[in-house]
Length: 220
Image 1 (spheres, one colour):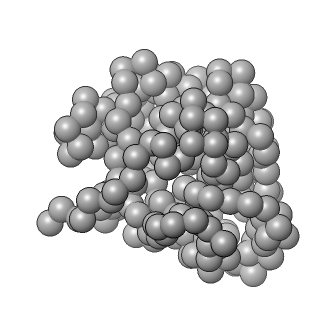
Image 2 (tube, one colour):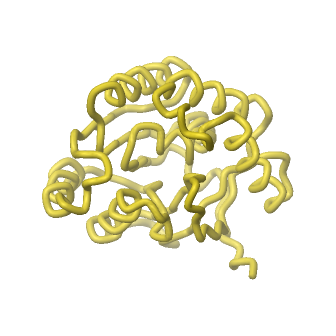
């Protein structure tokens, strides 16, 4: 069953403060590379926060963010936390406290985070903490394709052109070589996901999002 249409347009995002939250290096780029490109054009200030980054994965995300900035993604702040991959539930309280410490006094209009329906335990935890910590901003959830599958039902779509699609795929394959041993981590996976969301939204390509919270009117 198709979910209700969300009455948003791109001007709603103009010059806003936008937080992208991810459990792991590459999560944000997989789910949101296209959206970050579009919002940067609209003058949004982007904050980028990853909860787990160690060793080679820390090196990868650092180089990825540097490249995103060089290529027009307006990342004003980035936070690379060093919690353990697959072990976030063991440190939920510490992670929640850390995110609260970083963001409690910062203005945020929109948040892009993981889906509560994601089957990866780290992803679900980040989604949980997002809803527990942030009461004012609009919140959207992005998707990560995976072996387990997900019950992901988008109702918000951002149409993408061929150039952004190519940049996204090239970026992922260039900066996250440690992940390419996984059979799903290949260009056709990312292209197919954007193509499917394009079909659903009447575009050639799109990124899709679940609307977790959308607040009409001015924030107080």
